[in-house]
Image (cartoon, rainbow, N blue to C red; front, side, top):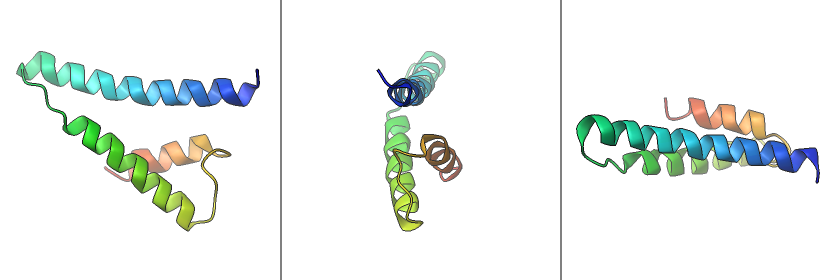
Length: 75
């Protein structure tokens, strides 16, 4: 097993976990399930893919950079 697979799995799991925490907090406070979190996560994913492709980089080789771009674009 390669170290890159472990790092990619941890990064992917942490992003999904953060989205799940946001949905859980919204539901526990408002008692209403707001699925807009999923929309923003999908939008951030596609925006990151577009920006990284436009600058000519590859996402698989730079997961930290693409995560930083995806985190700052929606804010």
